[in-house]
Length: 185
Image 1 (tube, rainbow, N blue to C red):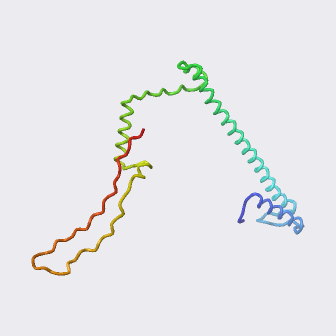
Image 2: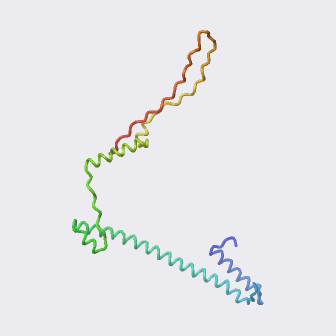
Image 3: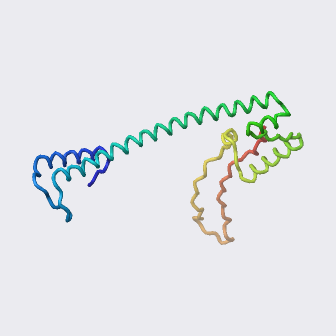
């Protein structure tokens, strides 16, 4: 059977049942078992009934999952709002009230000193320099000269007896200038 989706199978089973009603009038032996037309038709009808029942249960389950998700979203939103209200109402003494609701107290945030912030900026600058990373504005400032096409080697056309002629070195391509990274603010 090429396509086994439920509507196709139900259509197939309905067609088989119609064929049984039309063409099978006497018992028939299939796979070593003898079936009357009514028994044979009942097998395909049972399959259609099982498909319908499974589809109904699947729809019910799907609807239940959607209801659960909607309830979870509302409960989560209210949980966070209630937690915030308790913290606002009780202030520094909110731990006991939060524990009564089964909630945890917010973690205290450390106060960063100017020295700590400056050290973080220095680390950021050092990391960007080590990794050669640039921000979008710094990338715009990078300009490079087009690569010079290699010139053919200079060969003397005349020979001199006074010694070898000096070779003319090819000019190297200049690397593009990369500006230093700016500190993040």
